[in-house]
Image (cartoon, rainbow over all chains, first blue to last red; front, side, top):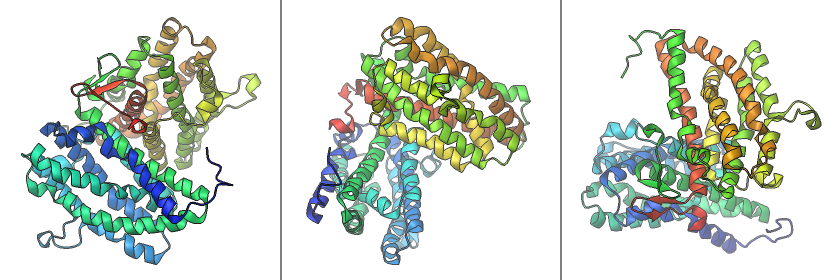
Length: 254
Length: 254
């Protein structure tokens, strides 16, 4: 256990390295995502993944608006507001300005879900909502610098997006390639977004070693949100056995 | 699908029956609790269950204080405040006034956990926190009548408490009988509490069929919280295999 009173502040480079090492707990290693990458999920399972993750997608601009509403720094707001446009869209849909939420609905269509099946949220598992809502409530209730820090799972996102772009055409050839546009857009957006989020985090939390360790805790919280979201989708969509082969049953199956 | 505009209001008895039928989704049927009842959990698994559930126990008075803070009705508050005493205690510990949270710490001791292992929350799974926090945030953000309704899983609680009192001495003889005091206390408390919660719910939500159906949704939300909590403990404490025997790994195991 470190002693944050006497331990010295990490350099900017050391601190960034500590943040990046948290990537070991990124949900790219969750068994559901490993099965997905290996092409082992059925169409129904891919549909449930897309439908549940939609709840995360629509939470993003609400979370970012909560950050804006807690942030008195105009310069930060001027940069951060781009994230809301990225997801909600900022122009006519026919002109390509439809945004990430609309792109996710297209992904739903590409895996065989109607717009209503996606947007009604009727396929979303309760535990998926609880995980995502924890992220929204964090952004509403915590200082804006902490919420900015919690967004830094974006450091690890390009890897998982690229994995999907690379493997899905081979593993899931039935998924319409146009449905992959969300992941292609995020490759660029996430790399740009992370610059602002990382700069704010490295500046603010480097005031003390205790704050730097707090930043690692916050990033862990966000990793936990993503892992719990994958857990919820797994329990909803996979055949699960516990202990010595006892069949897991969902609440709607008892 | 019912039409809440034309469907008629259920009688008080029908409405209560509809609420009670939601008990089919109570977490007494969760595979983890079935294994527990059958005596199939190890000491380590019982410890993790107690440690995770402690996070739920400490949430109860915070949730009830949120209800008080949203409720302008003095008569309701005068009854509801008893719940806070039930959990926080209302007298000297040596005089038996220690309350449910302290009794739960005693249950921790009875299964072999130190006070610090329980109260530090270090054994609590992130997804367990997300589920319990969803309940607290519901009580903070929704009208007090909805929060009262969400407490009605107490209708089903005496059954699960009695099950534990009956089966644990045989199934888990190593658990000190004094540790069971929490469940014994709750048999009386839950039956008394539910009278007020049920009366308020039957009165308020019987203003329309739409409200009555809203009450069923709210009770389902609370059943989902308890089920998701059991899911989180199961994934943390049990051997889990998905699909064709793929081992589930926890985030701290990757």
